[in-house]
Image 1 (cartoon, helix red, strand yellow):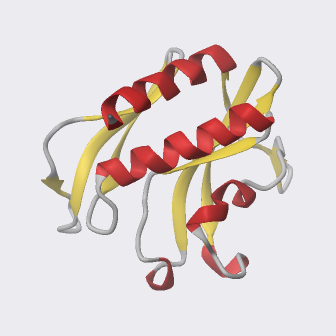
Image 2: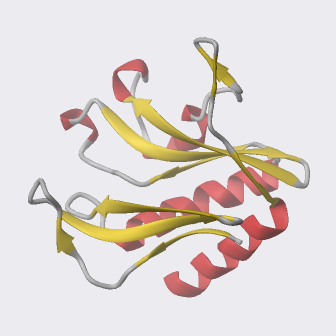
Length: 148
């Protein structure tokens, strides 16, 4: 199984921010998170995920799933999950995208911010998880259903 799944009720975070509790599921791995919903609502996140995943699958390229979106001029970085497509297999990494390293940040070009796949950073192994293209396609179908 693969996907990012949210609860239905918005809560206040410890920083008094409106967030939606959620989890990312990658096979047996499950990690909780809080998705901020002041700048984007959950439909905007899901639409972005759907667009990015479709491009990644169709082009056998990378996809980026932002899980914290703020007004880009007001933050230094955004949290994301990057999917690196390798034919029928997908490598997934959690990554912070530093906006000061991106000239003219545009939501229309988000898949270009994934960067090249690297398994090591500064000599350390980067944590990564694995799924299949079929599991990603199931999540695409789920997103299409909840967005319709």
